[in-house]
Image 1 (spheres, rainbow over the protein chains, first blue to last red):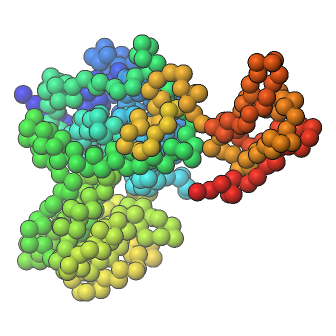
Image 2: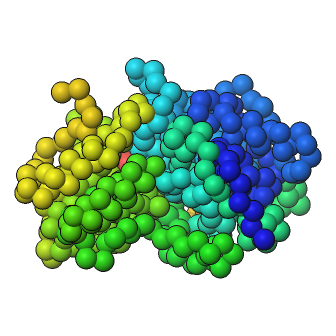
Image 3: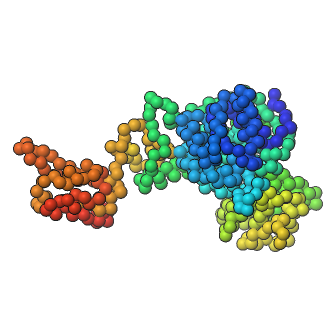
Amino acid sequence: MPTKLAITGAAAVAHAMRQINPDVVAAYPITPQTPIVEYFAQFVADGVVDTVMVPVESEHSAMSAVVGSAAAGARTMTATAANGLALMFEIVYIAASMRLPIVMPIVNRALSGPINIHGDHSDAYAVRDAGWIQLMSENSQEAYDLTIIATKLAEREEVLTPAMVNLDGFITSHGVEGVEILDDEVVKDFVGQWEPKYPLLDVDNPITHGPLDLFDYYFEHHRQQQEGLKNAYKALPEVFAEYEKISGRKYDFLDLYKMEDAEYVMVVMNSAASTAKYVVDELREKGIKAGLIKPWVFTPFPKKEFLEALDGRKAVVVLDRAMSFGKEAPLYSLVKSALYEAKERPMIGSYVYGLGGRDVTPAMLHIPFEEAMKGELDPNEERYLGLKE
Amino acid sequence: MPKYDSWKEMPIAGVIDKPATAREYNTGTWRIMRPIVDKDACINCMQCWLYCPDMAIDGIVKEDGKTEMVGFNYDYCKGCGTCAKVCPVNAITMKPETEFLK
C-alpha cells in the first residue's frame, strides 16, 4: 500500500533515491539542494540503503566522482543546483558523452550573478545542450515520480543517457505537501538492476572509457548521443505507461490542462504551473476558453506534441523563468520553432517572470491572457511580469 | 581503436571495447605534408629510418646483407619532415596533402 506523507520536495526526492538504492552517491551541498543530500545521508547512516556516500570537496569533484563510479558499472546519483551545476559544467557534458545513466535532481535556482539563492530556471537552461534528459516537475509528488521514471529511462540500453529531474528551489524543495510514496518493493522491481554494457570493473574484459577522440570519430559519437535522445523520446511513453501501472499516476510529454477546447493557452514549466492552473480556472468561470500546457519533458524537446497541442488555437503565451540575453527566451524560442509547421498559426507572445525567486501571483498570470484576448501579442517583443518598470 | 565506417557500428561513448588496439589507430590522418622519395636518387643509407620518430619508414635487409629503403607507412607518418631534412642526397621531398585529395 502506498504511504501518504507530509514532506518537502527535497524529502520526496530523497525517498525516491532511498527506494532506487543507488550503489554510489557523491554530492556536495548547495542551497537549495542541501536537504536532499542531508536526508539521503541520514538514510545511509541509518543503514537503510546499500549506498556508498562520497562527500566530495566541490561539485566539479562530485560530477567527476559519479562519472568514475558509473563507468565502473555502479548505479550512481548526485544532486545539485545553480552555481553547483555551473561548477560541474565541464563534467556534465562528459557524463553525457560517456553515456553514463546518472540521475541528478536539480533544485532549480537562479545562476549568479548577482548572487541569489532562490528559484528560477537559468540553471536548467544553461545545460540544455549538454546531452542530458531533462524532466520537469510542478510539485513534490512529480519530483518523486520523475526521479524514479528517470532512473528507468536513463538505464535503458538504447537510451544510456544521464537524466536531470528539475524541481523549483524552495517552492518545491522546501514546501511541505502531501506526497504518495510507493512501496519500497514496488519501486525496487520497477527500476530493477542496471546491467552496464561496459563496466570498468569487469577485469576479464578490459576496455577503455573516455579516450581522446579527435576528428576521426568525435562527430560520430555525437551522432550516437543524438540517437540516444531520439530513443529516449521513443521510450518515454512506454516508461510512463509502466509507471502508471504501479502508481496510478499518468505522465506524458506535456501536461495538458483544460486544453480540449482552449483558445488561449499559457505554456509554463514547473511550480508556476500550479498558479497558472488556478488562473485558468478563474478564466473558465468567466466563460473564457483558457488552457495550460506544462512540459514534463524539456529534453528531448516534445516539438511534435507542442505542434499538435497548439495548432489552430487563437493565442499562445509562453512564460520563461530565465532570460537568454540578446536572444529570445529559451522555452519561447523552442515553442515558436515548433509552430513553424502549424497549419493555423496562433498569435504568440513571450513573457519572462519570477527571476531570482520573485513571487508569481495569479494577478500577474492574468496579464498575458488579457493581452492575448485583446489581440495585443507581439511575437518579437519580450515582456516582463512583475518587473519594476 | 579499430577502424569504423559508420556511427551505427562503433561502440557508444568512445569506448574501446578490447585491449591492445593502438596498432589499429592510424595516427597518419593528422598529416598535412606527405614525404615522397625519389628512389633513383636514394642511396639506401637508412638515415631516414634511423631518425623517423614514428617508425614510419619501411626498410628491408636484402639477401646480400645490404639495406633498402622501400617507402613510407602513411598510416603512421605524421608528416614531420625529419626524413627529408636528414636525407644526405635530398631524395625526399615534402608535398602538401592537398595534392593527394580524392
